[in-house]
Length: 295
Image (cartoon, rainbow, N blue to C red; front, side, top):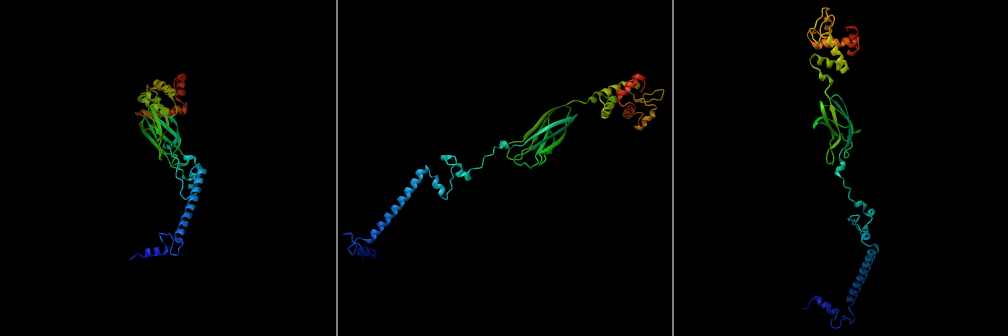
């Protein structure tokens, strides 16, 4: 038995004569050939159009721009305008070395007291109160935070006698590579002039300095009381004068303390108060002593 499809083909087409059952060429074959030719013609035209566009533009950038697929190549390649791919550019790289804290420090000191003022901030967080540490000879002696708005800071520290190497460090809080040394200084602190004196004269020197007098007044006081009492707390005079300042009578010194008979500090404090009230300074008291023989 022959297959139905074969019967259908035999009924419509004779392979030996290339004619159908009705004696004409196969309409089916002719229609298929026409469809194939039409498709080839359409494809050839599309290819020619694409080729022409590529030739005119020198690349396929024009085609890419007309499709929904975005260009992903580097904007500097093939001379493509940066404007055409600007939205695909990578964000600029940040150099961490440029993100360290910024700032400065200024120094002043009086005797052993150091004052540091300045300004500092971190570019990664400009409204953050940056930590500031003060180091003296490698040891931290003070710390403070800068004002988050004005970025100013101020701090006080103690110095030691001799050479003080001071460093002020602002601490990094962002992507920076390290903390920032915002200031340094070398401060020399000399021993106070009062350190040259000892014993009763040492007590007197510290009191003289506390009252605002200097080494010249101390030198005059030493001469004055060397002549009056030799700096002895028990020095007595037949006139009734007593003690280091030769108070007359000695009981006057009780206003400075009940131990006025034996305590050199009490006697010296009273004597300096007397000198200030009557003469104004030890230098003036010594001048009166030398001109009149008493003070």
